[in-house]
Length: 96
Image 1: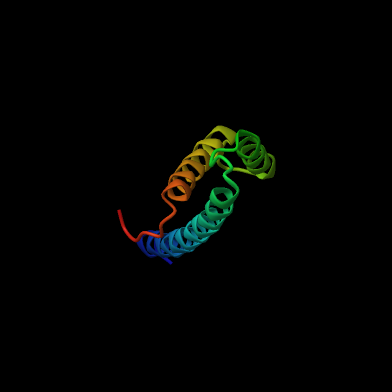
Image 2 (image 1 turned 120 degrees about the horizontal axis):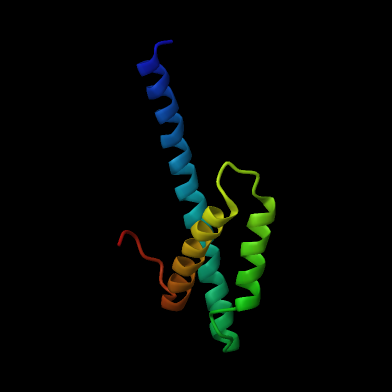
């Protein structure tokens, strides 16, 4: 296999992984919406700093690289922020 063929093959694999990640992130967001509905019924705050600290610590402890713990933390902080935003909205939205 030549270099160009190998590069194309690896990129196709990454493209498939990107779609799998997208599906999982959206699945996570759907669960965050459910949590938002529960919290709203109970009149609990959307932001739970203890839970967020646990999630960030949990993924960093599970991290085996090659991404640094700092990078993993930033990625998951973004996911948590966006899920929390959606949780506050309480709506399922496609696109932007």
